[in-house]
Length: 466
Image 1 (cartoon, rainbow, N blue to C red):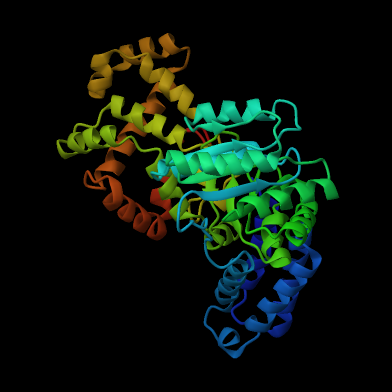
Image 2: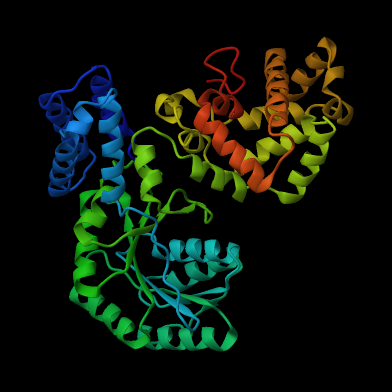
């Protein structure tokens, strides 16, 4: 995941500050020197890193910080605030046309992920109740139109295409078609190049002049590091973009682009791609990203991800069962499947405050749910409904049936008892009420959140094997 190296370097720097009861100006400057090196190592623009550490230093050497009882914490608070400010301060949403459709022009270099992210954003809007449409304006890249049709079919969103007609004409007709058929968003999937050239920019400018898009979003690959910022600046200078979609933020990237784009271009990051699936897209929240970089977790994104993967019918049924204290292994199986739908276990765990920055990828077994599901499927319906009847002989039969050890069956049953107890503490609530209680619990008691994710410590007592 992006920012892992930066988070680790910052954590080491702040440990030294927290260890001191009183800070001097020299202590702050030394810490900021390490922070600047960490930012540069993360591929943050040099000027951005220099200006950032200067802003933090100017605030941190003030009397309020130096005389504070917890000066180290005060400095971290300032860093958090300045990081949030650096990335835009607050969430930046898509503009909406006064008279539909809202026209969104997607641009970027070839291979940056424009076509896929047209579909990702359209899917997100569809889930919010909108009627989006995709338009194939890339007539040059082989199979570009077919690719857009494929991803459009996967999310059940219509694709407008006119073959190899002029891209400007296609854009004009797509907007007209959307207006006539009641679509409230049109995404123009424009052509890219392997590099920025005059021909590319002229075509994009012609489309802009013709259909007057409400949003021009630049899709850039976070894996390209500092070059992503240069691309953003070039497109903004020539075209005048309204925002950025940063892709592959889940990859092995240092993340510097996310910290530099806003400062260099003045344009906000609006969405980030967090995986290969069409549902792997998040709105960009500067304050949440700053918290994750500093190892403070991201409770709100955790809750949102949980709610999106929640099956409301099953939640209602679970609520009724909890009211009667009848949570069984079938329900645990449903919980595992819903957690799997939340995406990578590693990424989800790192959103939990006080935990994510202490867990290494090598400590997490991504196949834990698969193993536990296999054990449950090896049980009879009666055993799933009445786990208390599972005696030693039944455990041996279950273990043999799924090719595992009796110890693995014991771990699952231990996890079941823990989860039954944990969920009962929410009083059978689901939806917004549960979300609020879950947020409060995670902020006040990270250890309980740790147990909720099945993280009960390393070794034999840990049912997830880490």
